[in-house]
Image (tube, rainbow, N blue to C red):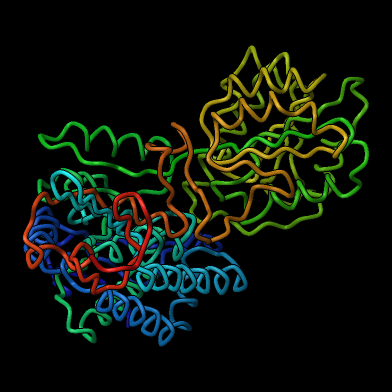
Length: 513
């Protein structure tokens, strides 16, 4: 049974006077039968206030207790897997395979944070014994607001990386559900609530709010007790939240993963040798109807003579693919409007549209692109702009002009590697992840992943929203000077009761003092 109310500190609070809304099936374009209640300003205030009230106690929970909590979320999710997958597909029109994959990815993400807590070293316990006795570690920042992503109803939403990393860090979480998949979000929210209860943790640790307007999100970000925000979505949405958070009397960090075109650079010899390149690129462009933040939005290929048929071949492959509808009619509307605007841009040599779907590819010369850098703006959907370049040097010049990105990809033959140094140097300053094989779509959930990049790909390129390092967004350093041993956090006590690897006078060790 899907809850339609707002979950406030353990209570699904019914408000008969609330404005209601429905999620929409992208295939049928018809709203689903369930009516969800919009959160009122009072309910937003209550959710954050209650989270702040229990923050100190939750921040001090043992790592073992947090591990128990995360494992309980995994267990609760599994008990309602079929129900979640059903409503997921109804609300997103994404196929069963994608739904199953994203569900398993969500469970896998949680497991990584279980393992991180088991190791315990993420607290970065550091002790200096000469001079004043100084002991430093990372401490949770406080209640965190998380905004569900439109394109990932599970892995980047209610129990996604933002939420789980914050809960693992010791921060209470208030989720603002995405209205496109309100039913999916509500079912997942209930599993988190049930996990809290089964572990004997305060219900105030987690709340779940509905809303279709900007009002709910704005009220959440502006609440004086909120200490951080996680967001995955458009540049406009992330920038608006960031500006709002900085205008507060007490500014707070907003970790927003925003737009990216993920440029792919193809060398002359790779272009000539790789017979599967066009199909690989087409598959990447079309994956998930192009609704990935790592979609290859720009492909730069070295073709001095202008003889390559790469664009035509990619278009031919796209013409054979029947794509699912985009996750919401408004996203598709915005995408088609961007394509129409591109079609009127005289710098484009061609714009080839698929006969079976909304997929499309454009072609422009490197020279024209440098005179029209607005063409590098993200077109969110199954589209890629192909750029014919005359040399690696021209690619490097374009790389200098491109804004911050989540990823960039270099595809080249081994004998060309000595010439790639300058291009690599430029891209290192522009991206969070640099690939040398394959395509950028697909983000491995591992300890070493960096999913974030220089602005405007993210609001703070020093952090990642994927992988275990995502936890560092919700922690801050605190140092204790000449503190009595019994008053120190366990991570810093002489006896090292948590058996952590600690840096003592510059040397890593598990030894007690």
